Image 1 (cartoon, rainbow, N blue to C red):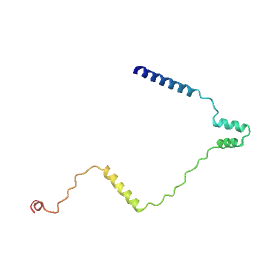
Image 2: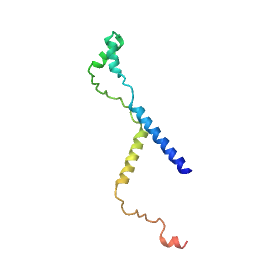
Image 3: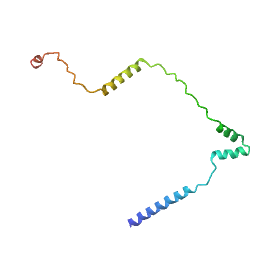
Image 4: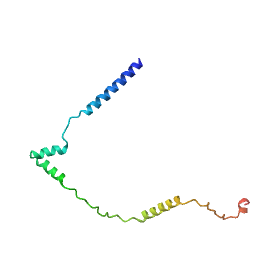
Length: 112
């Protein structure tokens, strides 16, 4: 019984996918926007003609202007310096462990 249900589900899925593909392939041919505007301009639509005239004009290249950057504060400079130091420390090769001399002689540490 479950085999019959599974085969019906698979069959329905195949029919559904096939019908969606067939419906997608049969789209009615519509004029695209520019062709529609050209037809409108041909019959005297001024807005369509002005839009087509605007599209015919060559694009002008705009040069980027200089951006006025605000002055960085001292806190920002300090943070940048700290981050640069961290990056340098991470990229350097590890050296020997730092040896710190004891402030109290060894014999006093063991025998107070």
